[in-house]
View 1 (cartoon, rainbow, N blue to C red):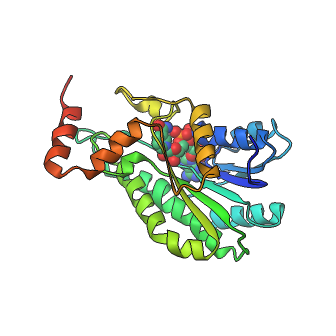
View 2: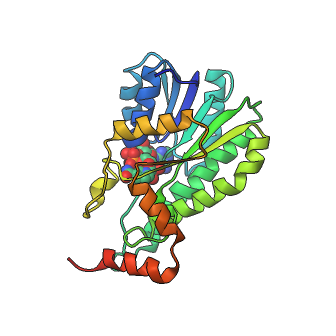
Length: 252
Ligand SMILES: NC(=O)c1ccc[n+]([C@@H]2O[C@H](COP(=O)([O-])OP(=O)(O)OC[C@H]3O[C@@H](n4cnc5c(N)ncnc54)[C@H](OP(=O)(O)O)[C@@H]3O)[C@@H](O)[C@H]2O)c1
């Protein structure tokens, strides 16, 4: 696989999907900058490649987002050709386990944290030569689903923000993308106690994400047919929609 990018910054690269995307890009010669909070894990990963640089970052901290962006530009000479905002946290939640603190935490990382890093990128005043800026969201942000009542809204807000920004960001030279994977076997889904259709291994999901980024698709959603069913769910009137989602909450 030849990638069209000389350099990439993966934010949320210490495990799961982000780690695999970082590995695959680095293995194909792309210079990678890898960020997350667990710097020891990033160090281990970057030691496996000549072309990988760890940059510690907590995206909930705006100063850290600014500093990390400056560091990437200083090391790379410019913003990388590809930036993937992948960092997120997850807590399963239903009405019985409803927890506003966990909701605030997910909004803080998944939505506001992503906004912090986008802000740092926009402010960096760096000339942009068609930088691909991809954000990893989730089909759970498409419509309110039982079990995801804290996480889903954080991704729905993120999707909405990216959609709203895309026309102006394109004018500024950013090639905007959304990556919407189905279930991936990572530490996030380890928390789920329900059957996850078409559960993907992280390396498979990473390959699909990179393939999607190499196309010109804005919406990189996979795998089918799972994703098509969720897209269909988006179109249903409430009566039919609740008929279906009510079945998900029925006690086994
Ligand atoms: N797994 C799925 O089924 C699935 C499905 C749809 C979408 N997604 C999305 O895919 C992305 C990757 O998730 P994953 O399943 O691979 O989970 P994961 O293994 O937990 O990866 C999440 C990454 O985000 C980083 N992160 C979390 N909070 C951060 C913060 N405040 N600042 C910087 N980095 C932070 C984590 O690193 P540190 O803890 O070291 O900071 C880690 O590298 C997420 O956006 C998730 O919402 C996952």
